[in-house]
Length: 240
Image (tube, rainbow, N blue to C red; front, side, top):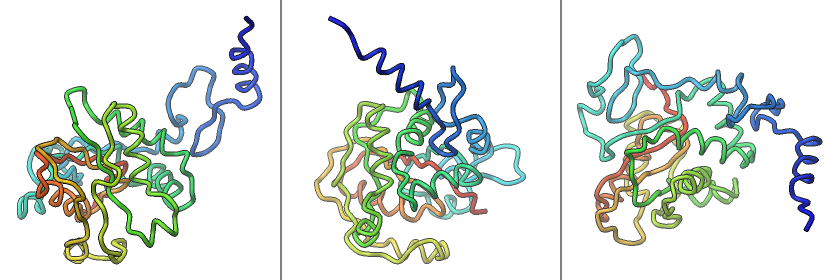
């Protein structure tokens, strides 16, 4: 029987060559990265000098290993943060397009980059997205954290707890709030729908700034029976 799949695939590649999902420039023939070289050059990785707990980058410091001032004052409920890079340049642009301009197709390439931040030693029982409040979900029609969580879960073969954690109240936007105000704003914002039994959980969000949101989520998960919570984000904001 004639296999039409191969010629059809060739024709699709001929007329619609693979392109960068951010800038739309065509990929070189042998390119197998999720973004083009120029866009990837603007994805700045976290420096080695960063907090081992919350991944806060240390400016003007040559070594890490020590907790940042915020974590020294109050140890976060999560044990580690994985991040694709600094929330700057092309990575900031990609997240802005993904989050505010309905570029939902960026979920897979960004999810692939996030998956690479997890070492082969990382084993998780469940992936949980940070829930979006109902008002913003209605405005946006999708939760970017859920889309990322699904991509990471697909690549890892780990189930995603889609409705395990819910946002019980419409909180104020965090963007213009100070760090203490962000923490107050998140108190009591999340509720766990089902009890947990010691699972190791990967909590997924798009951006982490002060950590108030992921801390509130982690506290609720641990209170509900999780054994450990680690955090995975695309962008880590350099707040100091």
